[in-house]
Length: 364
Image (cartoon, rainbow, N blue to C red; front, side, top):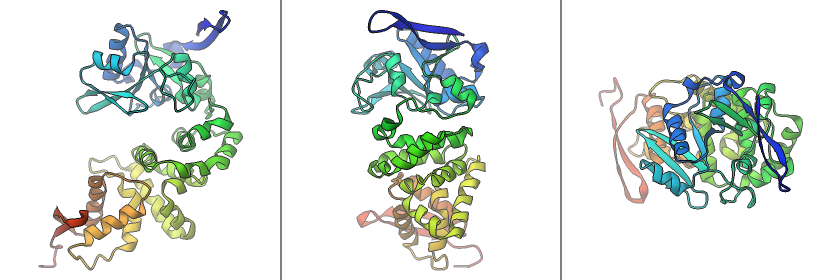
């Protein structure tokens, strides 16, 4: 075990971080995505301190293969853009860089200062950047070249203790960003870690703050949940904390008053957790039971698909998925009833006219 030191405001040397070697953190270098490692190496060669950060480091320490590799660097977005021609700067207020390798996208963020609060966009140091992160298990930095884990907040110990520990004080953390409540419960459901009683109580006290979160941010969180390895566990945990009602209010109300609907609805997430096939459609889990209960499959009118589409879209509000993704989920549900949507063309008002292939055995 090593330590990282720096000067305090009075010029005195003080210990800032614990540095874990590869024999101590047990991350297997071969599990690190090669393009992510290349990005880190390239920026370091240009003189910019750069690390893999967040959930990827957590998953690597737990022995999982991360789906995504986020990267943090001392390089500014414009400097990153100059190094990687296959990149694009995104965002207006909070600027990030996406670096493209084929179908893969790597998100790079510049270290940010804490002086402007959680919503600030002032660049800073790694020591400031770590204090902007939500929970200690997501606040570790991995040096791909020297195979070191840099820990400013006791995240390694918390992972070993299997506990969700907030970095930001409890009276501030959710008022700065209410979505952190969803993330805390999601991380606990994904890892099996404990949420301490004080954090549980603060979530239950502050959960009403989620009412003011934009549909786009809620949509982003739902999509992450649906595409995770354990959507059933996450949705069940969010429901137990009273948070799922802010993500899917209509479904939550129906689950509260109809136990049979709840069992069927949750069964869809259980099936999704086990589905690894190429035809997997995550969005289908949100709408299938509602559609099944509210569609007359004996009356295949020309506008049935369109009517069902708009009904499903209202049901999953405030989530606002891409139109083609919702249509894809509906086509799979229709196909399960022997109704194959052959083609569509847009009509006035944004609705579509759909033609169907005849059902097998009908002769029509």
